[in-house]
Amino acid sequence: MIELGKHIVENQVIDERLVDYCIGLFPQLSSKNAVKKALKRKELMINNQIGESHIWVKKNDVILLVDNETNLPHPFPLDIEIVYEDEFLVVIDKPSGILVNGNQFRTVENALIGKTRVSRELDAFKWAKPVHRLDSATSGLLILSKTLSAHQKIAKMFENRKIEKVYHAIIMGELTKEEGIIDASLNNLPAETSYSLIKSVPSLKSGFVSLIKLMPKTGRTHQLRIHCAGMGNPILGDKLYGEKGTVLLNKGLFLAATELNFIHPIFQTEINVKIKCPPKFGTQLLKEHRRWDKFKN
Image (tube, rainbow, N blue to C red):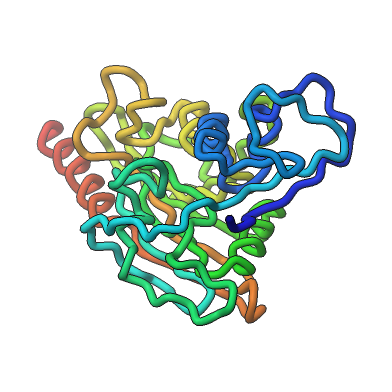
């Protein structure tokens, strides 16, 4: 058993069960569903006992996030681009339509088995472990750790908002302002996203479609998708938060994590990793503009 995270309840908790208290407690547990899965896999412990959903949390309780896996998973055959790698961490370009990890075979974690170098550090994992998550439908940059110390430090950096994330998205419609901040809370938790317009093109279906840059200050579940939809500009291809009848089908979600900026947890050097928007972004903008030109002419 490997301890991935530790939390001591400092304040008196009123009427809150473990399954609810742990939401957002660690970067890996960004939603109630993620907490439930961790409890099912016996990855959450409280006061050195296996955690259960119904347990009431109280002051001075010690909550641990652990990794119980010891057997090397069977590798899932999928090409994944490795953007950065060293002895402590790896950054990959996650394809859209695939889970990061979980109780399934078709995951990023399984796809990387045998594709990254195993660390020679004393606290090395047998294979790279995701430190945070991207939605299955979202593509782009994802950090995985190779050692326990790197994992714990990067997780703490996410918790303290020390890792700057940049996304690109195509949204439906036209923005009323070229840049701004959305600070609408999610599930009674503060959530903040900065945005800026890059380009708008006319669209027959929605008047305009716009390529924008998104910079989340917090990391709530589906934050960017909900914030964009809340502005009246759902992300193109969003079947969950898009407007019924206007969702672009069979093209996937037009949301990608394109840049990460942080201080290396071991070397203390600046790490800046960037990738281009997926090719489908430019292709879709061109198609939308051509269709509009053809109809108008």
